[in-house]
Image 1 (tube, rainbow over the protein chains, first blue to last red):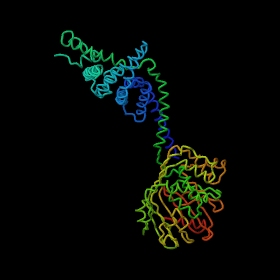
Image 2 (image 1 turned 45 degrees about the vertical axis):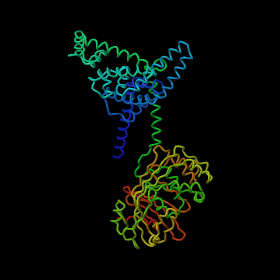
Image 3 (image 1 turned 90 degrees about the horizontal axis):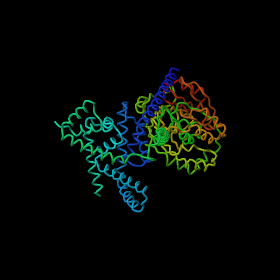
Image 4 (image 1 turned 90 degrees about the vertical axis):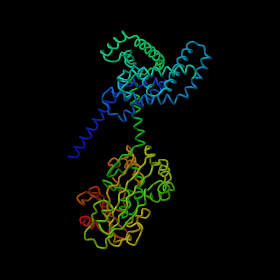
Length: 189
Length: 391
């Protein structure tokens, strides 16, 4: 009987732990979802793909939480995983995007409707930004994405595992590098 | 001293402490070079911000509400966990999870052998916590299976055995204990020469092929039995520990059969003679089988196969803990069985008549994770007396 009692206590404890873990997960999800999605959307440029990747980020977290309880560090972990996945997707799409760009230009020449023109311009600009980011080294590219998705220096530092005091100088350099890559692409390089 | 780019850049973003910001501000108001650099950096930041703004989600691309995403996440978790279970659904059960697959396939192979062979044929296959004997009327199932090409194909091609089980004759209980890794217990005061054998351990594995099983059922005319679809692809492995057999009296094993004590799975009857008594013992094998199998439904299919009506099978299946119980089907006309107290635990005593050998018993019990099967000629009293003498 003693054994049965112990077993019941253990089962109860396990199920409580599971419930707590589930609640924790939901809270983490609610807190970080839109940022994670936003980072990924910026990198892949498509809602469905960004959403799939973002869900995947949280699935990874669900499966193997990093053991960070500090919300900032936890956010840093999630953003880091998201950036890595998104940036990989971006680079692997790079070639495909070149074709898309050619197709976009063709479309622009054929369609003089102003609305469509704006859309095509936006699409072209996005593609050029993506191309520039894809040409950069991962860390400065990640830094730009984080910054322009609205992350604070402290969040950036946590995500990239760099000292908060170095974010400013790295950001300035990343912006300069981005500018160079972008201009080169504009010139058709 | 001039400001560093990083300090200026942080200042532009409104980052840093109030103190550091005031210091930067004070310096910028008095240093033309740094002010110029600030302008350059601000332009660079603005240019980058303008371009990167193109990446932000807008309109339909906007993230839908977090609660919708959360719904999707919940479904995704359910789906992923299901997938994972399908792939990685091995759970170790000890002493034994008799998955219904194992029961279904291996159980059949032993179901219809004469009573005296049951011990050896199933002991070589399972370790269990409980044994439940049921009376069935299987009709000519054994014959049908024997003639089923699909079933033969499965038995010969699909069941993988990691290594050939070898039997080694040893001279003492100590040697047997050393080889098998279990405390070997033996009866006292037995007539006849004692022979001890240790069968090496092995791993048996197979993957459930639902289509093949259904083909087998069709071939033997039992299409009415339905199997749960989730068993398809289930990988089942059984770790069989070493087994110790002690035999006394006139056992054909002593004549140098490659399988002593009727252990030849292809011919379980081979080594029995009327005066041969055997005690087989082995620790629990481990069955690694898919978690989440509907054991009840499988058990029900198994019982139906053995001749129960669907209703009886459904009802009976509910009463059995299929995960830990070995269900031994006993053709009702061949033997009787009863629960008995033996070795301080509850065991099952099976009594049967053999045309040539007279009355035979099989006594099965499980103690301290070791399964014992005592088998020989004689009555219930003989069986219980011998079992009591085991030390």
